[in-house]
Length: 127
Image (cartoon, rainbow, N blue to C red):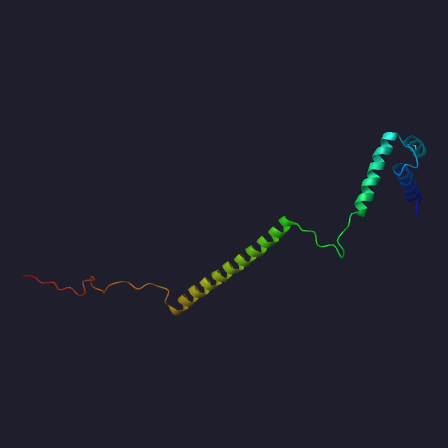
């Protein structure tokens, strides 16, 4: 164990002795070379840490941490990729249809009506 870790361990032991009533705060503060106020603050942190360490934890491997915003963005990205692919396919189909019409000669409109004025089917009677 390193010297720093040993120093921290000794400090925790002194604080634990104060918490259990084996040692008064003033002598403990003098022993550690800190003020009583600092000792009270550190004692509170040691106690909170000990309590947190004893809270029952779920067994097994911890689950993945959830990030709702990231999950939303990933789902939205997937949706946009699908839409992009669909639009690319539609454009490709449209281009193929235009190309097929141009090759077959069916791409132009025929003129309506017959040559000669478009009066087909009417009789011109003069009385």
